[in-house]
Image 1 (cartoon, each protein chain N blue to C red):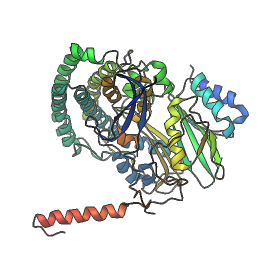
Image 2: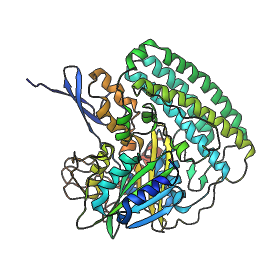
Image 3: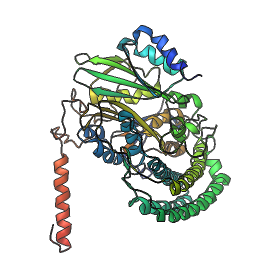
Image 4: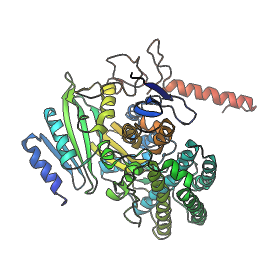
Length: 148
Length: 400
């Protein structure tokens, strides 16, 4: 595939859904999209375009909870990051694990550490925290400080 | 009648060097399902990183793992350099590659030895670990430490490799290459190992893609991915080497990939050492401040791609650090490889991805009854000082 094609294709496919486009050519692209469209976008980039799913990162910012989905086009040396912003009072997003089995663990981790709810996750158990960890306490959130 | 038996492997098991818990659902001798429980080693490194400066963070991530203790720093520096758009000096690039490849050598040999141990082939284990020792000695000579080399900083490396150390290094490599060659030939021709490992725990190409496997686990299933070639950093685009892949996807293929990769590593180190004789100059670029923004860095660790994401708000500390270690995506492949195999093969299949749990989990000690933290940073410092005082007292020395 020609260098720019995947990015162009992705741009065309998502079209108006892209809320914000940031790039650091030639290697890194960051796209903010509405949270309703994440499953469709992930499906397109993973199944149709053949990108490798690297990982999701959850970032707790004062404005919103950000979930970043990092995808890599290994042959083209490009990393595309899809971003969704979740309002703090409703931290919910559709799970991409039904499409990408490799995303199952990280969504469980983000769910328990940051308190984001992944809808329709195939296996929504805890991953890292102990079973008797108190409900509703999310250790990776900003308000939790070390030595607290 | 439906009769199932659960066989536990772990959390503490003589075959595993780290705590993790596998629940094997059995039907007779055959495994029909597997359930993985992790979290015994979680240390909240990502959270701690938020209270460290960019310079300190490199040494923190170095503590994620003792075996790939230079992989995380390289990935972290790559991320910070991507964020701040820093170009590192050419000499530093060669030194990074040398340290990275030496690590791959010692890690692959460590794994090959352990794999031998897992299947009850202890001769192989002791042999290989004996030949791994000189590589650790090279590390000690070059970096000052056998592990946790503390060589990387954002912008370059901390220590130079001295001209007078190069002959020692080359000699050590020649010696190691002869021994690895001998072991490789012995392993590849061994009928017992072939009978034990061929056709066992096959990871198909489709499963490897779906579970997003990386490193030797993916390469043994015919997926030619390697960050060193795909997104070149350090000196990997300045030297000549090739990616090793196998098509079979079984445990034996993973052995072959790792052993043959050792020779590529030696090839890379030799070329880098040669270049070090001519490329002189600075070993680190000056990094004044880190601008706000985000950066992604990755490195091909011995077990696969280590991925770091760093976000900065312009202060001297990161707002967020995300670490993805290779085992995090390689371990779930056991859902595809273990069911259908016999219980005796489960241990080696699980070991075949070269799991590294302390990488995979990165939290705190909690008192179960009260829900309070047992130890915090200050407590650990106090305990450590107390111990030092005690040792000094026992040695009859005054504490300074």
